[in-house]
Length: 245
Length: 260
Image 1: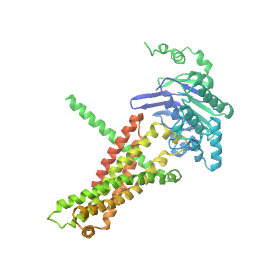
Image 2: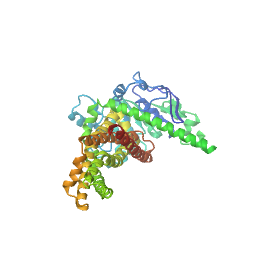
Image 3: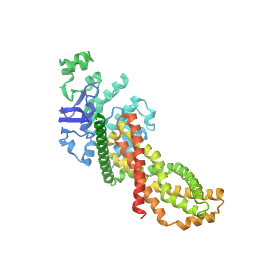
Image 4: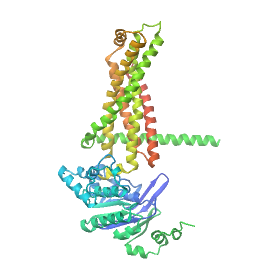
């Protein structure tokens, strides 16, 4: 993403946001609530278009793609939403199979088999015929994860995948993210507030602050960073960031 | 003076918002027209939407039509007493049901039932990111959500309206026989005297336009919902208010253009 600017009404959210994500790595974007992390993530799949600047995926300028090319690009991207965004009226199996139904020449048997695999991976076997409303928050997140990986995407985008989850479920999700990267070579971008998770899963971490990138580096570099804003954020010390009296 | 400035600003802001909304509605209409060719996305949902929009609306439409027919017959006899032959009651009931009250009252009732339902459903999908999820799964949300609803509205509103027209006339007939001491022959004589097949076509044309209006306005406000549960409530209210206003404007438009 190069020099991206995005405003909603009078609120300027991204101000010259520039960030490069390398093939095969898992990059976590950290930052305070409302700092624009999800907005940045949505630019990558063209859910939002920048007011200024450019977003490239596989050398294609996402903000200039027509609708059909954009859908073509999205077939390579899995997106895990903050609140899962499962379709209320569909069963878990139908939710997980949604993306597969858009892949040409995929038989119903192949879809059923892949759905079963994905649900097994997130430990949701036996939940195929349940509705999202019958699942707990953690189970819904895992079902959302299963839906995102069903099409075997090249890129995974995770919008706060562990927020609101208990420590055990958080560890399970973290483990899945690491496996996606290590075993399948998937490139991942993770939006998170959870510093423990960020240190556990990331190859690199970027901190979004005041509409731009304040820090970019490895988890070890993040730990050693002396910038008071960065240090204050990771240590949960608002005074250090100048945010508390 | 400051009040004048503030009032002028408020009018300006409202005008700008309205023009912007009309522009966004135009974009949605163009996207929906383009999405028609993506039959594999909307066709599987068409029957379900036809049942939901049409079949499930029959009870409320018939309820409205039943009492409309009764009141029309009673008011006609009250108006005509002594001055006009009573069989004119049949003519007035049938003509008014077909040309005006059948389509308009059904349209208004369905703007509450169908329009509110669509705005709330699509709006909830918007605020819970389900529409974004559709996009990331390479589904065109306009083809998937808007097109089947609008086509179902265009097909099913006329069906519901024709049923309402028929029941309204039948209710008028029943009222005339029970309360006005008219025979069915007399009532139907009045119906036949004033009936032309064009009346039915007029009712159908109006109801198609109302069906497209209610469903597309519901989808539009649902699609542009922001702000959580409160936003869904706001979108729902706006969908009903705006589709009601458009229905009444279209009613006048069709009368002015087709009843010359």
